[in-house]
Image (tube, rainbow, N blue to C red; front, side, top):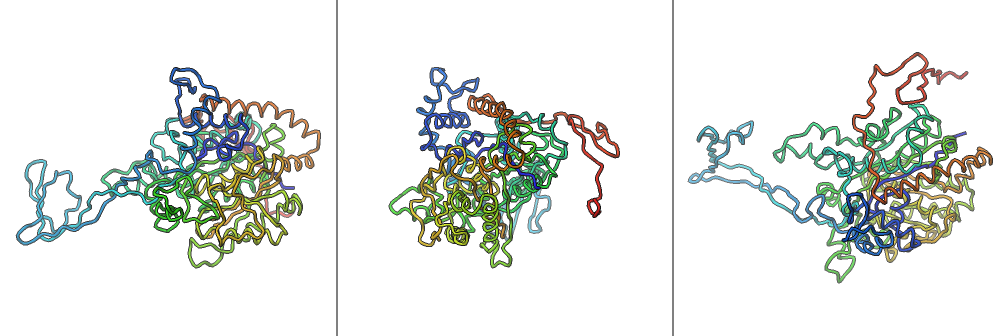
Length: 635
C-alpha cells in the first residue's frame, strides 16, 4: 500500500506577505475575516513591511508606545492594502521610467573631416580595429583617427510599457534579513521562504533528523527562469557588454536548481535526495509530483518541496512583453475607457475581458511527511497529496500555444478524486484552482478543458478560482501560490473570489462551471478536495489533486486505527502550540531566517563506513548499504 504524502508545514513570501499561519491567504480575503484574524494579518504584514519598528522589532507609534494589533490595523490597513498584491511597479528593483539601454549608431567621416578622439591607454580595445590610426599623446593618453566610419553605442533610457507587477510587500527586503553576500533575489527569497516553512512545523528539525535516516530526506526546489538578475546569470551575460567584470559567483548562483542547493547547504544540512524538475510555469507541480512519488514509494519519509522565482527585471518583462503575453499599460487603458491611468490593482483579470498576464515574484515551500511519520511526531496535518499528473501536448504548431495534454491531466486528477471520495464527493465537495493567467487565449482554452471534464463527470456547476488575480503569475511558483491558498480555504472556509473580474468574457466556456467572481463561503469542512491546474510554455501541463485535512485524517484513521489517531492528537497539541508560538514571535519581529554558513561541515574522513552502513556525525540513524538486488524475482 502506498504511503500517503501528508502536508505538515508550509511557508513562504509573495505579494500577499508571509505564507505561514495562512497570512498570505488571509490577505486575499481579509475583508471577509473575523476581526481578530484580520488584525493578526495586518500585524504580520506590518512586520514584514517594516512599518515603524523599534530596535526590539516591535511596532510603535511616534511616541514609542507599543501598538496593539487593533491599533496597527487601524493605523496601517489602508497603507498595507495599497502596497501588497498586484500594484504599480515600484522602483526598488529598478527605475521603471529610466531603464538604461544603448542605441546603435554609425559615425561617418568625410575626406575633409576625419573622426578624431582621445582615449586613456587603458581604455583602448584589446584588438585595435584595422581602420584606426593610433598615436601616443603622452604616457597615459592616445589620439585615434578614423577616415571612414565607426559603429558606436549611444547610452539612452526608456520607460517600461508594462508598469504593473505582483511584487513582494513594499518595504520587504529579504537580503537584509541575513548575510546575503550578493545573492540573487530569488535565492534571498528561498532562504526566507524555506526558513518560514521549516520554522512553522512546530517540530525541531533535529527531532526530524533523529527520526529518519539521512537519505530518507529530500529537497526539491528551483526556478523556471534561473536567477536572471545582475547577481546571477543576468550579470554574467551583461558584464562585459557594459564594461564590467564577470564575478566568480554569477555562474554558480544563476543555476536553476540553486534554490535546492541553498536549502541543503544553509538551512537543513541535507545529505539526502536533491534536485529540481523544471517544467516552465508548471514547475512547482512537477516537483510536487516527484515529492509525492518519493514518499508514496517509501524512498523518502520527509521532503521539502517548493520553488522561488524573482522575474521582475527589465529584460524578462521586455521578453514576455514582446511575445504579447503581458498586460501593457495602453492595453489596460483600452479595457477601461475613460481612465487616464491604468487600474494597476486590476491588471490581472482571469476569464474576463483581459489583455495579458502580470509577472510576479514568489517563494513557496511545503514540508511533506509520510503518514506514519506524521502520526509518530504529532505533526500538523494541513492536507495530503492524492496525486499529480503531468502530460505533454504532442505535436504542436507553436511552443507557447496550448495543446491536448492538459485535458489528460485534468481528467486524471478528477478521476483520482472520484476514486478516493466518491462520485458525489467529486461533484459536490471539490473545486478547481485554475491556472487563470488573464490572457485572452487562456480564458478560452483552459475554460474549455475544465468545462469538458466537468461535463463528463456529471458536474453542473464546478467552482473555479484563480488567485493570479491577486498575486500575478510567479511562473515556476504559481501552483505553489494555489496550494497555499487551498490550505487557507480548509482553515477559514472561504474560496478567494476572482474579484478583479467583474464579468465573464463571452468566449469563456461555462456551461458546467461556476467562476467565483466573489469570495465563496463553503465552511471549514465544506470542500474535501481541490484540483490545482498548471500550464507552461512548451506543452508542460500538470494537475494536482490535494485532499483536505478532514479527508486526510479519515484515511489515516482507517489505515492506522482510532487508538493511534487518539495518541497522535495528544502529541499534536504541543506541536500546534509551537507553531502558534512561532507565528506570535514572527509577528513581534523576534524571528530570523535560518542561514547556517560554514556550520558543522562534515568531511569524508569524519564518516564511519562499513560494508553494511554509513554513519554521518549529527544523524542518529545510519544509511543502510545492505541493498538487495532489485531485479531478482525471488526478492
